[in-house]
Image: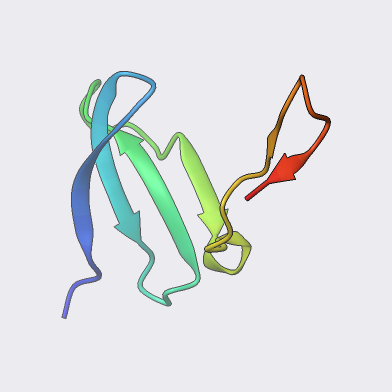
Length: 64
């Protein structure tokens, strides 16, 4: 079975998000020009489900 792929936009460019065959990396490849190499490639182990922290200028507090 082929690894999952899907359409995804990044920085207002259309492209394809794909998982490597070994399931260890995710890559994003722009649609144009045809035959482009992946512009982004990162390890799955670096993906987390944590929400980014937002710093309030007025209260000096951290919210999740």
